[in-house]
Amino acid sequence: MSEETQAPSAPAAASTESGPSTGSGHSYGHSSGPRTGGRPAGGPGGRPSGGPGGRGKFFRRKKVCKFCTEKIDAIPYRDVRLLQGFVAERGKIVPRRLTGVCTKHQRRLTRAIKQARNIALLPFATRH
Image (cartoon, rainbow, N blue to C red; front, side, top):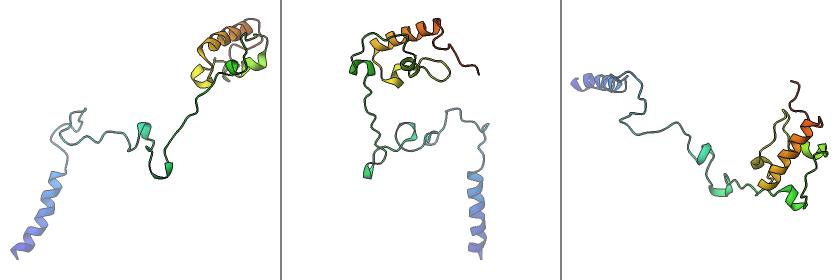
């Protein structure tokens, strides 16, 4: 019978070990146990790193400058249709990392957009 009385006491002892700690409950980066972190498993940003079947492999094609490929040296500020492709909906100039324009042409594009804004061909911002 003594075996039966000890069996119920074992789970009770286990429950006290998993209970709250004597501290304030916040670790603030000072933990004595293994660090799990707040990140999900996988590659950077939680994306699955390459595995079987090629899943998770993300290949971004290198963007080429539209003006270099078409050999456009001078960007006309009067060509509103061309310039609107490089201006966001709210009126901001889109950065070159998104458009793929080279540095030289991004500077010329910025100057052309600003000239077009000053003579009211392009709006400075939307009316929203």
